[in-house]
Each structure stands twice: as C-alpha cells, then as structure tokens.
Image 1 (spheres, rainbow, N blue to C red):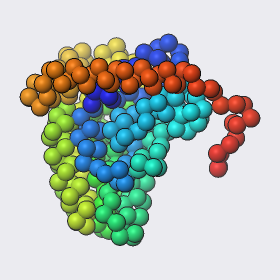
Image 2: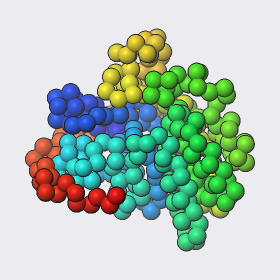
Image 3: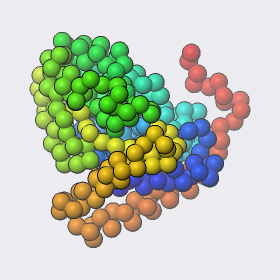
Length: 303
C-alpha cells in the first residue's frame, strides 16, 4: 500500500511539472483493494486492470522503473513509451494489461479463466473494474459465461462511488453491486475496501474456491478515490461534497492498518523510507532514459 501511495503522489507531482504527457487516473485511496487482492495471487496468476491501473500493476509485482518510464513516454517503459499511463502490461507476471475502455477487461478475464481451465492448470484471474463498468454490457455477458463454465475468475468491483462524475446513487437501483451476483449463480460479497485485511480474507476464500474448480466470485469493495476522475483532486471539484471527501479521507487504508495494530510505527517508518528511495530511483531511471526515435512510431503496431 505504501509503494502504491508513494508512486501515485510522485506521479501527480511530476504531472504537475509537465514531465508526464497525456493524462493520469490516480489510484490513491484505493490501495487496500489492490494489495488485498493481489496478496492472494501467485506470479503465474493473471490480473486484468483498468484506466486507473497503477495500483494493480504495483501490487502484482510490476517494475517501478519501467512503470515510471512508461508514464514519461520513455523508450525503457513497459510499452516503449507508446502506451502511457493507461496501458501497462507485463505478461511475465500475469498482468494482461490495463485498458482505457470501461468494462473491456471483463471479457479478457473470462478468456484468461477459460484458458486456464482448458489447459488444466489451477491458475486464477482477478478482474478489476469500477462501478461504472458494472452498468456496461460486458459485465452481464462476462459474469454469465464465467458462471455457466465455472471459470476461475474473481470479479473485483472497486466501487469508488463515482463513474467518472456520475454518483453511484443516480446510476444504480440496487444498494450493492454484489447483489447482482445472485442472478448469475455465483457468490456476491461486499467488503470494506479501505481495510486491506478484510479484502485479503474475502479474496482468499474466492481464490481457493476458484482453484477448486467451483467457479467465479463477485467481490464488491466499497472504496473512494482521493482525486477526481483524472487530474483534479476530488475536493477541488464542485461535483464532490467536501464533507463526504473528509469522511473518506479519515478512512486512509494505511492508517487503518496501523491503528488496528497490524504494524508498528517503527516498521512502517522503515518501509516508507525504503519505498521513498525506490521511487526516487525509478524517477531518476525514467528521467535519464531516452524517448523513442520518430522512426520507431509504427513499430509494434498490429492494427
């Protein structure tokens, strides 16, 4: 969680200095979801990610240097600087790709689960998506296919209360997205997405169920993004209620972990010092890396 938080804070700082082109969709505030889910996965398990995917990639073991270089558009980045923030992938550790299209990761996860089942492995795929994607057609199609084929997929809905700028209450007639799981014949679980231990325990049960061949699970994590849809801080936008923002900021997942006695201050301080050094090394690597040459613009383009 600390590594994700520090990476996001540094990315925001660099973006503000025009060192990162394009745009950013930051993950700060939602660290407990990525850490709690990926803490249950093996290196050969899969994840599919979203446009807000830095945290997922870091939790699955992504290389900070290559991630930071990709954000800066450098040749040493995961996509040789051509994909940017929203398209990081690393097949060697099961990161099947972050996707900028809302809901696009859901069928990819079903494909990964089907592949694992046909090959006879016990690999699983964790599929991250937001509450907005739960109103996308791919949601129903993917959950239905995964359920009828009993595929090893864990559908992880990060319900951060806003689909871009649309409040959850105006887009859903159900209290919980996880309630929809019953319609597909799979377990639906609601967890506190700011509590990494609660996310970890729910995911562990879903992963064990998937590895036993008993099919998918839908886990809804109630969480909150600290910044707006893209670059704005949530509390800087008129779309958000300042009181709501302050309530969720007090639910900082790192502080919750510390306050509940899962880690001592001394250990947390040591981790923060180590992570800060690692982040600075990643920034230095990215800054010193070259940009792609103009004649490389069409390399690796397949369609």
